[in-house]
Length: 258
Image (cartoon, rainbow, N blue to C red; front, side):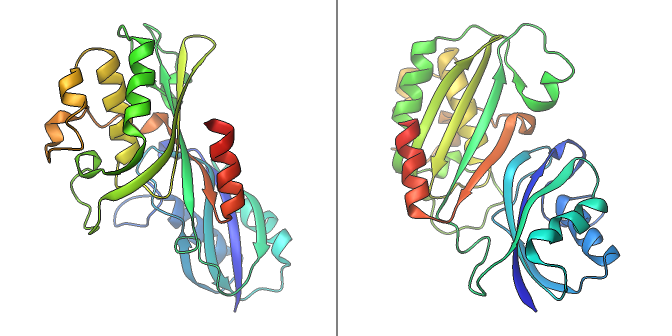
């Protein structure tokens, strides 16, 4: 069997996340189904990381071992024919046997979209969090600058994670106000805990709306207390944007966003 890399984009609205699970439809299930329909034997199928139910991806990376005569760069066409339209393979290639989508990753970037309008449209509500409350743009920037860096992010992890170390380095948290009263928060880091980006987003928005005080914010890395942080922002505003496998590419992206 040869080793392959697949770069996927997907709308996560109709799926229970990436990872296969009982009594649920997932992105992994759909990809495996396409491989089976195409009569492609495979094993060791693994994504760069899980995305939760309702979370989207501009570029999720998957690796797998497969036995097929289809050239690597053509594999996407065969698989896309049997995938639903809300899951697309944007690139496929044969790669070095040592490549692993999860363990070879050097970092990730995420984007979270917030709709600040009083009323959200049907389309916007599918891809953003409607937060129709007053916010202080200076506090958005203040919280973003404070929360980035290397810290113990234990207060930014949802229950259910068994990971041992909660220390992570977030290189970039960049807010950008977009036309039509939208806010984009972009995150770049070496890794993120379960629901970490969504809790960071909830914390930034709650601080900007005075639901979290300055005292609370500046204690989040000093005390183990989940109540110091904001809510877990809903999934539909979150996009896995990029997985980095090259240090230079990651550093260039950090420099661009800093």
